[in-house]
Image (cartoon, rainbow over all chains, first blue to last red; front, side):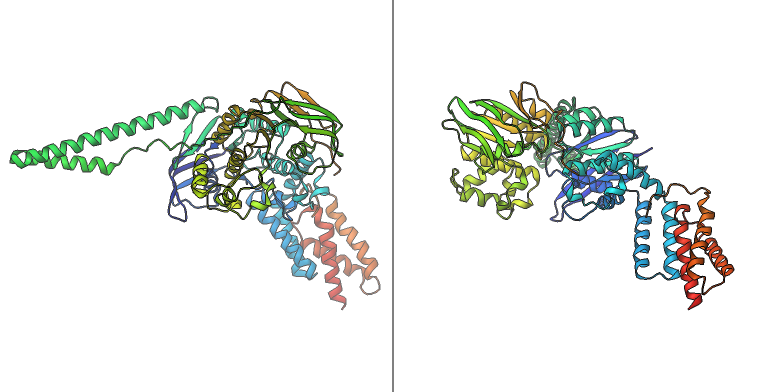
Length: 539
Length: 73
């Protein structure tokens, strides 16, 4: 049995701002609760408090059943961490401690074969056995076979950086779901997973009897898995006791209720102030009214001391204005096009106004195809061209702009680039404000969150006057609200859109689909196809 | 570390003594009497009681070797 009980938690940022205040919620045994909120609302901080990485300033967190935590960075590990180290780090504390003791004893034995070192090694092995280490190794074997298709002994020294993001995530998820911990905290478990991987994750989360608290921006995953939704907003958290389907209505109703309560409080406050004023005048003329005046003053003071009820949280305003413009009827034409070594030749015609979802296997060349259309040098054979007045605008995955890393959004907007004129600081700030980025205008790009970087890239597309949008996983780092703002902006965009996506919710807004198959075939479909498996590569 | 599945009684336990005695007897035959080798190995086996069964053969032989080496120096 596992549960998490968060009670009256408060957290203040280093600059003195209160990020979380009076946060209380419970995730009961076997519950699968989603933790949602806008980028920067405090989800990861709250998760770190629940995990015990941060101590709450006020309040407490109670847990039972052993806690397994999957951090957000798993999927993007680029250092020399091995498969074995990851599995050890995901194990319960007793197993981790026993492992470290064995490692230390082994190192000591390399230095000296003396009897004390040998006895210490034997003792560490006994401790490893007592902590359930040998059973854990058997579980690790099952985990690596399930996640990577190879036994533990063959992959334990392999560096995580040689695995794809999806493989890293899957390895960690298999370890946690098969491990002994009864409470799992998963920070964006679906990032880096392709659609079959996301479906696998959904099925595993639905069948597990463990208690799960997870952060995700994937609306399909939220809709299928979550049976509670914990929302971090307005500096606190509240719980919707149902699934994601009924969540938007519940959130709107809550906001309206908060606004109503606040309005009533303001009205009552105004009434009391007015009464005090009136009684003050009357008390001047009639000493008999003096005591009533005094009593009313006390009542007003108590009312104000109790304070107003929380106001409705400010809505994140994201107003994307992707305008576009009329182009030739044929926006993109390709004949016998083949990206060298990635696919078989294919023909394609995309018409002005089309919304084309580019789907298919990881590693099949989808991103390269978009990059080719954006004008980058990508080795290929066959012919392709853009139609009249078609101006491509490319949204790359966030790590694809090393030249931006040490520059600020205002600087990038001010200088402009070929095809996008620079704008003065006033106009830059106005544009950033519409994208909810005004406060980050002077922050360097690399310090922005994934969601902020993604919104900034969409702003650049807006300013570039593109009439053909080439979007590579645009919703990957966007919170739910920003993803919906992007969908609205694309719906009103006058032009053509090609987007690579694994976001099933987002894909529904497209008219037709270009599918890159695992066998190298590229074909069109009127329905989204997510079943293409990963392109096989040698292990 | 290798996969060692069980901590229950196993024929390996006795083999850990027999195998170590056989190998160490070959190694130390010119310097130590056979019954001393048996005694040292048994002592080692006793001192290592509680260690994981699968690891015993290696642990016993290694410890016995160092004790015998120290004894003959």
